[in-house]
Length: 224
Length: 272
Image (cartoon, rainbow over the protein chains, first blue to last red):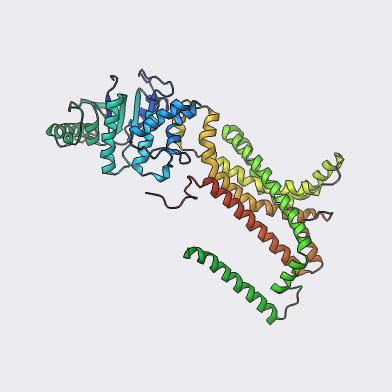
């Protein structure tokens, strides 16, 4: 997987996409075999965004974003600046001192993304981060994520079960089949960058979505 | 505002009606004061014996609060110990349960003997208060241990994973994640323990029957019973209930203040 790539893992529920992310992050040991990935496990080199915002309800937005630094006791003035910059990057300036329960679902997810970005990770792992959000918020966050990726260029591994989302976001899509969990298709997405609303209505986007849907259906054993 | 007014006026009305019914019953059946004194006689007793009853109240309150403080300290410490080692937890938890389910009244005589022997051996004379304190503490510390342990173990799984991802030490996770998570559980435990400490202090005094220079409200109740001073018994009972209510309200207020910023049970009107 080349540096700076945006790879989506697309597959049906239960195919082990989330488990794969956790193995890559070093959170779960693989049940058999080894994880043959050159991943730097130094704390802060990997950012992780869960399906739920996973914030600490007793901490402010700023304090939540500072968490990676607070854990290792180096939350100084420079780190504070970085946290404020990350909060600005996800469009939450002015909410630094709000508590999570005062924010909407989409805003909480933004805080979660800011926290993952604050250490400027090389690898960003996102586990169906927008699955629980409404359509409007979801599209908005898709665009925001793309912009963050263009600016900072981390390698992104994005787990989703939405064909449209994966095509819109990724440079490459790995379709995974369930039982046994295998990569059944590896598709490059050559839609022009930067992508925006026009991308969604372009014929190339529709063709790609159709192609990916077919691959997904084959992975689920509907056609073959 | 209207609802607040109702919340105060409705129970007050019920109370007033109850007292009126009580007075009416005593008058109608011409009940003897030692069977059921009228509310006025109770109020008189409260006024006349107020000074000495207040002294007893302070004694009981002292035992209760000291026991509660000890329960918070020791209970919290045990819970932290349990959360750090699963082995310690499964080894010791059953015995804490045994200590809890054995009726306090049954343990109290034993404790009184021991404390008597210990304090006499130390040459410090007799300290009935210490026996009462130990009894009240035994009753009070269990809810704090049980609740806090549950709280420390119920931190969000994903947050725990995140802490590991960022290389958090066990102590750092305890301090930044497990302890804040456990705070509401702990405070619920403290609220329950506040009531239990009072029960423990009174029950222990019934058994110990101090009778020395310092006596608590429980002993005053026994005394009033022996002398058929039922009005005084009621007055002491009233003071005990009042103490329990005040302890509960105080702990509830502290708990709300601590959780005001973030916890669902203490916040009103969420934005989404």
